[in-house]
Every structure is written in structure tokens, then in C-alpha cells.
Amino acid sequence: SQSSIPALCIASFGTELTGVVDNIKAIGQICHREGMWFHVDASYGGGALLIDGNE
Image (cartoon, rainbow, N blue to C red; front, top):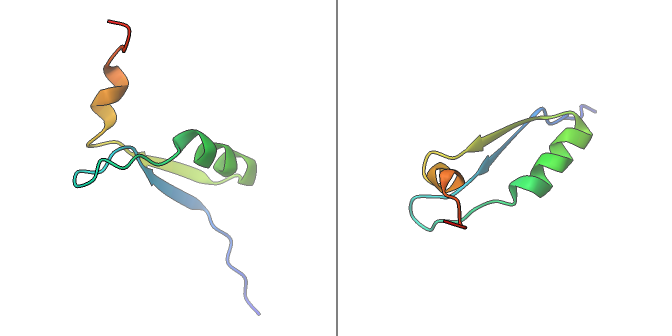
């Protein structure tokens, strides 16, 4: 019997069609704990990270 070991997780920070944002913090914690690479696609929602909500 062969078993698979995940090595990479890909999440999305904002999708073009629906604007859905994955729980980056929670997913990142799991990936860190499991020693997995973690990629976040922020091509659509990444600009929101640069906005200071207090201004």
C-alpha cells in the first residue's frame, strides 16, 4: 500500500468572480505544523493588503 504525503497547499486571497478569501492564517498554521509549502494566490485580492483601514 502506498501513502501520499502532501507537500504543498495553495490558497486564494480573493477570487475574481466571487471575491472569496480563504482563511490564510488557519491554513498557514496547519501548513507550518505539517512542514508543508504554502502558496497564496493574491493576484486579485492582494491590493487590499496595502490599504490601511484607519485612513
